[in-house]
Image (cartoon, rainbow, N blue to C red; front, top):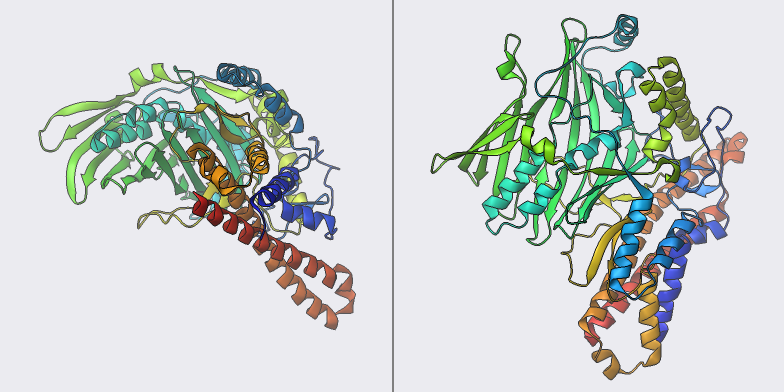
Length: 625
C-alpha cells in the first residue's frame, strides 16, 4: 500500500513535470517524435523566434483547422520551456511576503507597470452610421465586387485596407465590457427579476460604440491572442482574454472575469458574412454565458448581425439587425429583443430601433423599446409603469477606463503587436504600405500551414460540449482552460492576470505556478506526520485547497487527453498511409516508422494511468475527511 506522504511526493513530481510543459508532451518530445518543418521566414518580416508553439499553427485558407499541424520542431499547442519565465519568476518573487497588504500592493504595482491606459476614446455618435467612399477607392471596391456573387461567404475574400478598422476582431469583441460594473450591480439585487433586468441593461450597454466611418476589423490569424482589463472605482479589475481558436471556420473564444464583483463571462463566436448584391451582413453564430457567481445563475446571450447596405447604389451605411435572446434557465426569465432595419422609405425615427419583451415561461412580464444607441425604456405589463432601462447619453460618461498591455511587453502573437505595422500605415493613410504589411501576415499563415502536419491545439481554450444550450441556441463549445466560476472567498485578496492566466492570491499562502506552491505545502505537511489522527485535524481550508489542486491537475490531464485523441487519429491515418505505401514504394520516404506510432500509443497509456492515479488519490482524501 502506498503511504500518504509517498502519494504527495508523486503529486509534487507531477506538478514539476506540468510546470516544464506537460508530462504527455514531454514524453513525446523525449522519444523524438519525427517532425517536418518549412520556415517561411524568407518573406515574413516579424520576429519569428518562437516562445509558443502556437506561432507554428497558423492555418491557411485551403486546410481544415482540425488537420495536421506541426512546425519548427515543436508540437502545436505545447508551450515552450521558457514561456515568459522572467515574468512568472518576477511575479512569484513579489508575492513571497507574508503581509496580505503587501501582496495586494505588489499585484497592483505590477498591473500599473504592465498595463497602460487605452488612449482611444472614440465611441461614435447616435443615429445612422454612413460613409462616402473616396474616388480613389471606388475602383478597388468595384474590383472587389467582381470577385463575389450574391449569397457568397466573404470570409475568404481579401478586403482592401481602406475599409479596415485598425484593430483585430478579438479587440472589437471587448467593446461589450466597458460597462462591466453594471453586472456587478445586477448581482447585488435580491429579486431575480431585478437581476435579470440588470443583466439586460448591461447587454444593451455594449452596443453603442461605433468606429469612425464604416470599417471592418482585421480577421484574426489562428493562434492570435488579445488581453485587456477595465479598472473599477473600488480598485478591482475586469479581465478579458481572447484567442482565435479556429481559422476555417473563423471562431473566436473569450473569457471575462471579475470574481470579486461576482461575475464571469465565457463564450465563443463563429464570424461569417454574406453578400447580397447591394448589401452584406456580418453574422456571429454562437453565444456567451454570463455567470452571476453568488446566485449560481447563468445567462445565455446571442448577438445581432451587422448589416451594411449601399455598396453599389446609394449611400454606404450600417445598422444592427436580427433577433437576440437573453435566457436564464435557473429563474425562467427570458428576453427576446429585435433589432429592426430601417425600411427603404423610413426616416431617422426608424434608425437603430429595437423592440422586445421579457417573459417568464409563456407570460410576458414587460416590454422593451427604444434605440440601441440612444434611450431604451421598459414598461411593466402588470402595472403599466414605464421607466428608463438605460440612456446612452448618460451612460457613455460613466465608461470604465480600459487598459492594454504595453506593446513593448506583448508577445509576438498578441493582436496589437502582430498587426502593428498595418495599423500604423492605416492611421497614416498609407494604403500601399498597409496592403503590403497585411499581405505579409496573410502569406505567412498560408506558408506555415503548408509545413504543419500535427493537430492544432489552442493554447488557452479547449472544446467542452457538456453544457448543452437551450433549443435554438448555437454554442461553439469553447471553454477557457483556467475557468473559475466559484464565488469569491473571504481569504482571497485580489484577482489578476499573469501570462494570460486569470487567478487570485489568498492571504494564507504565496503564489505558485500550476498549483506548484499548494502541492509543495501539502507534501511538506504530509511528510511531518502520516498518522490518521493528524490528517483528521487538518482544517477545511487545507482540504478545499487539495481539492482545487487535484481539480487543476485533472483539468490539465483532460486537455492532454484530448490532444492524445487527436494524435491517435493521426496514427490511424499514418497506418493507412503505410499500407498504401506498400503498393507505392516511392511514397515510403514520407511515411513515419512504426516506432513513431508506438511512441504515441505509449503516451496515451501514460495519460490514462495518471488519470486513474488522480482519481484514486481524490477518493482516498474524501474518505479520510
